[in-house]
Image 1 (tube, rainbow, N blue to C red):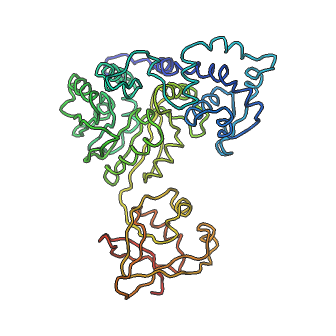
Image 2: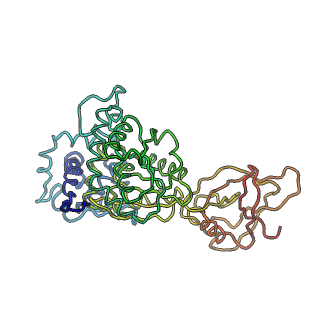
Image 3: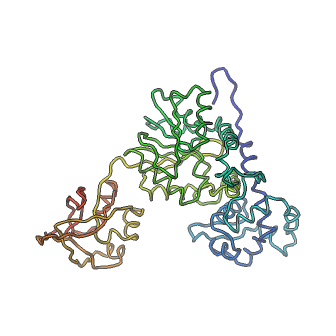
Length: 466
């Protein structure tokens, strides 16, 4: 991260942590002072996170952030494999449970009047974010004082863009190094703020172009900063709303740099689906962010930063496991995570290089069969297959019966009856998933290619004896 002749740049990770963890201590104070969390956990004994949430009257997202933070501090054991079971550690039992001779509860409650403690208690109960930076200033003309609403104010948008730009000066080259071998023709930096990450990725890639996709007034701040860096001829700014319209076409890599952590699960799913729809086959999704470990036990600096996001946005630091599951469910493949710098990392996911259409009229439409066969739930469109009628077939394969839950499966037979057609669902899947479907179907079925009622060509399983 230095130019020739310059001295090495000191690693500022400790400085990121001070800023990013600013609300973390207040969350622990709130947990002790407002909810007596650890005494309640002692009463519950090892219990699922859902039971903890219901007992204390807390919302889902902030409870997840709280338990990850407590696990990272060594105050609870969190076991996702056991149904997200939460158990006190000896450290918490001795020092944060009422009645212990070493209870530090009164020590923590002495700071319960800090304004952020009340704000975080409110977020825990309601899941409604508090004001950005605990500010008491009025919001923009719309009346929205929350983080997303305040971005409509040009002054606030300019300050946030400058802040994200400053953060990226050290982080962006590390991201570029982590994906240096990735083939890129055109990169779309979604919600890319100043475009500093796109600029770093393009630095050693002559001939590659990029664009920042941003809403007003951030788009204007991005244009100013890109022009000041001499990058306006290589990095365009496309004005748009990533939630209200499709992502622009013509880019083979989509970069979300510290964007997904600002949003809830539904909107993260929306962004992944929008990326999948706009990417060409073989295109890549890059999520550069602070990621919680797959087991949700840390690392501590990321768990602390997640508290800030919980406080001020609808989001959190998503775990590697959660994002991997969401990416696979969207249809991405080859998902992997790489560390970068400053407690950040990049999650890579590829849109399959080729897709095929599979028409299903029977058990492959069942969620449990899809999950067992493909490892994800499929998105499909209603269609019909002309020239066939339904019949029923008795299955004897125990594995197929166990997966589908029945030994009676529908099967297609060819029909000469005028107007004969069978309704079903057309699914877009990968060649590997088509092979998995072949393995699921028993020998009584054969896969053939047909023309659907919509005019599309698709594979379908019919009776082998037709």
